[in-house]
Length: 285
Image (cartoon, rainbow, N blue to C red; front, side):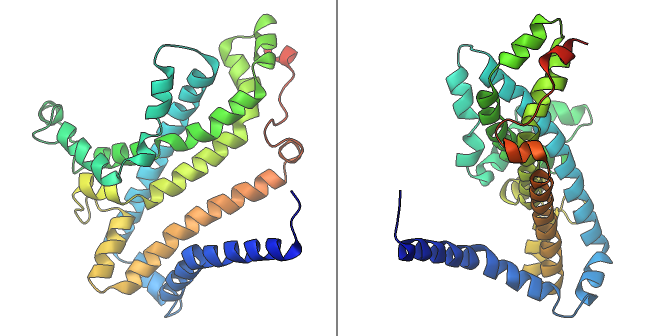
């Protein structure tokens, strides 16, 4: 649809202003606060044992969530696209539940199930395994919140590539694992990468569900986002700005790195929806 130049310029200006007001300006204020005293604020923050622990816990939780949701996401994506079964539509709808339910509700639900008075909590604690107010609960809450991110990236690509090459490989004697590793996985690799990046960024920034299920105990279950809130409320804005800057920098760096890597890949440039894959006949070898 053709449009006059002034309409295009107006729309472009609206988008730019919207992004600047919503993202650019707040991030600029965070960066300015983090470097108000040069690098001294960062040095002071990183020398604080509570800050170091919060960063380490956040990184550990994020890595665990990325691994869990990547394996689960790819498996569920294959199930949804390649197989028909009763309740498929319901399962597909339930996978979007984390996007519509408040993270606070997620945290409360985990407490009701795995807390001291919950359904499984007493039995797990008798076995020496604590979920609520412990790192396992933080991982569970974050994994639930990030659940759809890999799936919603992989499902459209699996639908687009179809099953022709997979069926050809199977007819030539390839096992399921050979077909997946040499044909399916190369075709969905960039969708998986984008899902992983989104999951990582979401896990690093999760707040609501984690605050409810962790108890926010400093030096035990306090993640970086919880530390930012506490230090800001305690009028330690420098530390809050420094940690917020570190979290934002990691997320932005991941997205930028993936963008540049994909732009440098010939197959991704030539066909974003269907990257170059191994010939089906090779999967049987």
